[in-house]
Amino acid sequence: RLEEFLKKEVDLELSTPPEFEDRVIDFSEVEELMNSINTIPAPCAPVINPQAPNAATGTSLRVCWGLFSDDTVEWYQLCYKPVSNERRSDDQTDHTLKVKETYCTITNLLPNTQYEFWVSALNASGISPPSERAVYVTAPSPPIIKTKKIRSCENAALVCWESRDINPVDSYMVEL
Image (cartoon, rainbow, N blue to C red; front, side):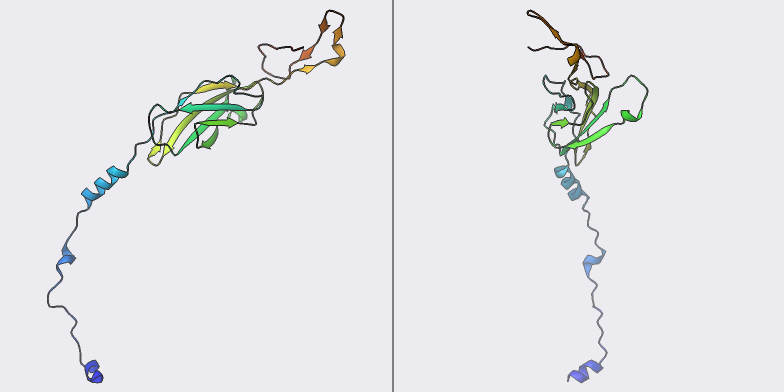
């Protein structure tokens, strides 16, 4: 019987066309609703804090910032460059760091040098405007004591030193 069945020509055409083929389903309302649920706004500009006391060494600075709003932030982009009165030079390039926290310690800096910092916040929706710029200063290098020029007597001592810094130092503290 199988052999007879296979010899027959079978008509596989359906007598009634399926109704769903020509139907167009409009998902625009659903898509709009889903996008409104999952969309978070891009964050507002962070606020960079002024330099805190004891936040600097001769080669590092600790920079802190915050947000005014409860924005969702995935990470921050911290940018900095040395401050210079001269026209743009090779040492004036902007440096950028990707940071998860609202603070960062930057190392390998020059002693007694001003650096300009600004920060932006980022999330899946985009990047915030940059914060205002803040100037931080690294601590001066310790001076070099000129041991051959040291003089002393019963009631006094003369100690001479020279600065290793290019920029002028405001003051020195001598400890006995």
